[in-house]
Image (cartoon, rainbow, N blue to C red; front, side, top):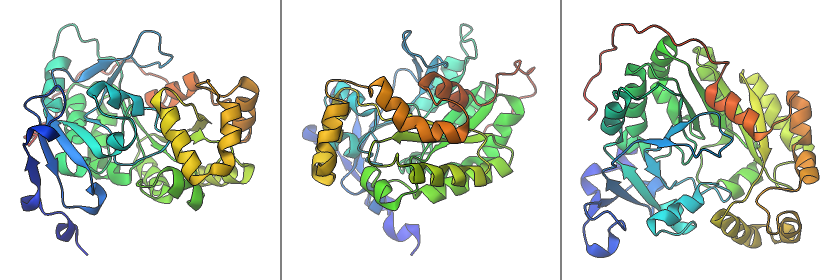
Length: 348
């Protein structure tokens, strides 16, 4: 059945009653869409004051800036580390994170202005480090594409991390990016185990569809790796599970394969443990022992959880290395000399 049957733009609802406004944004417009992927979700359109987000100085990430056109994510991954950020908006990190999606409708225009500033040093910009830039809502708003167009026109190094094969829509744009700057993609594929996938990532595209995207991107000359993360004890870290996903990554021509063990920071721990009690009560004692008041696994348990992946990929999948390899792609090259601007059409 065609998508038009499900998605009827003339039936979208703009909710303007005060009770549904986004806290702190008096001019926010809230919409719902008649689409199966958006059931129960509300999309809050706001006008952001800035697009580039500096990475905190104490972070171990090798890139200094991120852009996030959306906050919240309909993928509903129980383990998502970005959940606590929704609390800054007076939403909760559980159901609200899955269903109350903030849409920064002016992010591309704001980004273009920021990239033109004389003080901007063309540092690497990462997309997908908070919530997924190619989640379902991108089909409706196209903000990620418009942001990448701005980065292309500025010849600014950048990268994308996602769980969605929707990024294939922008293949030609990616080819334009690699022609003028350093650009790479990464697909997150924690497991191929059907049960583990359905339980932990209930509204994400099928993992094999993501691997098909990896193969297509690499075949088209776009450096694309796979992030096998998080590895969750007793859920997707069994040797045979890890071996299956690594073999599939290699078959897809992944330029890099890495991963790391689950970490549970802030409210994510509460959400994940609640999910565990509901879906996998047999694992609750194990996780209470392993994590307790910790964010990360004890070192010995982390080594054990990551051991098979480390052995198969031939390198230790520590966080700093992963960030470097997956967000920066290959070793940084000298900045290319500017060439004539690529023609840019209207954003909307």
